[in-house]
Image (cartoon, rainbow, N blue to C red):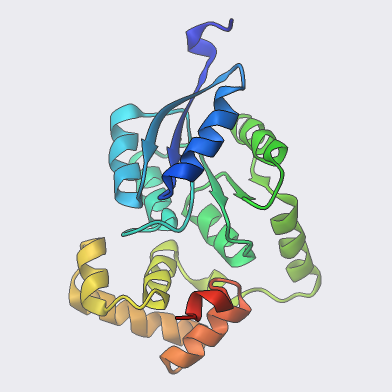
Length: 221
């Protein structure tokens, strides 16, 4: 067996316990990976990271309260050397760009085979950026078509507030969750609309659908 010091200590952050159980099982089968902590939301991920200081965080971007992008931003602000790999259902280049801007070192979608996640872990631990093929393809096509996403102009904090607005959170709820003033939340909402060139919530939703930030089924019910 490898010496304990050679293990990569991994923290999992996902709000679905059954999902964490699934990829915990996958990771524990690897000789040099050990799951040492788990979190069910972004705030817990940030708190537990500071307590455990794992070698690698594997994190979803959609979680209750502060989302993954905001959690990544906070962790990287606290520890500039933190290695964070996003593992998510969001097949969206816009999400990937924001996660990388916030400090993530990789972005893998859950639709990819398990080996893709394992390869991404190796890449991130080697100090390289890792993207799953579907996301890399989207980014390449955007570059070839010279069509940068309007959402890419947002900062990670602005993107998190956009995500919360799309989840129908009020300005007061956003302010409370992110520990900012109501005025700051309202001003940021205005700035987001200005940057994206939209004048109403309906236009904001339409843009989010086009950019795959949300799916049509998210709007049902």
